[in-house]
Structure formats: C-alpha cells, structure tokens
Length: 130
Image 1 (tube, rainbow, N blue to C red):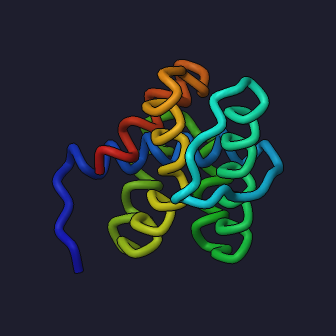
Image 2: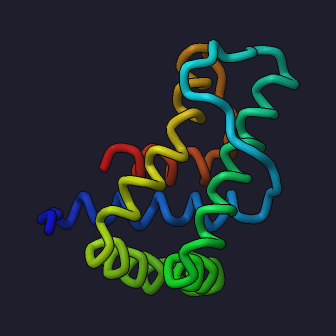
C-alpha cells in the first residue's frame, strides 16, 4: 500500500472535486499519443472525451462513484475528508483516474490554453500533482 502525505491527500481530494465537476458532462476518450487539435472544437472534444471516460470509469467503480457523487453536495472540508479517506484506501483507483484525466493537462500545455473553469482548474492541478 502506498503512503500518502497530508498534502498528497488534499491534492487527491481536490482532484476528486474535479471528477465530481467533470461527472456532469457526457463524452468519450482521446488517444494519448495523438497530437492535440488546438482548435476550439478540438479542445472541447478533448475535455468532453476525458469527462466521458471519467464518467465511464466511475460508473464501473460504484464505491468511487458514490464518494465522488456525495462530495458534490457536502461542505468542502467533509468532501475532502471523505475523498482523501477513499483514495488512501484505493490508491490504484487514484492512479487510474490520473491517467484518464491527463489529456486535459496535455492539451492545455500543448495548445497554450486553459480549458477548465478556475475552480476545476485548481482541483485538476491539485489532483494531478499527486
């Protein structure tokens, strides 16, 4: 089992906030090796694809889905605690979700753009930092 620092858990919890936000959108996943399409439509498609993949992943992991869904309606400190506890107990799911979300950061870097709202951007950066 992996040991996580408090900072790492906060990052994971914030990232789960991103998952909760992304879970509201429906879409499918891009290939990791494909060069990004930096047009507005291409960037939107990447975000949509990642969101769809995250939704699909959460649908196939009901316990993670329940925690992420509940976190959307909880006060932030409670949501962070619940998410931190869940992903501490399930580090492989954290690693898998990071992989699913990585095309967002790739697109942002390669296209020199911001694709998420400030709240989701912050949560994404925290989650991806591990």
